[in-house]
Image (cartoon, rainbow, N blue to C red; front, side, top):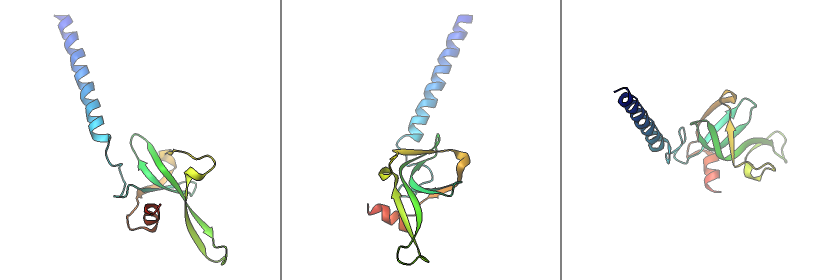
Length: 125
């Protein structure tokens, strides 16, 4: 009788584990990343003052694919003016495929509106 109870506990544990795995696969796989706009891009502002734009997944960790660095540069003609640039990190010497962010280094993050200038620029690339 004690042996049957042990078998039942193992069987129930296997079923529970299987259900958890199936829920994870069904809920998190092939879904639109959390906190993204329809275009799939999000913006992340980090404690160093840098702003990154890319496709962000927040579970199980903060990972951005197709990353771009948002930069403000001085205008070459008029030093009183500034220009905004979005630099793809794939063109950087270290060219990462993705960036992992530490949660404690993120000041804020959110979806990039489809009507924003950055989203329009990225859609044209």
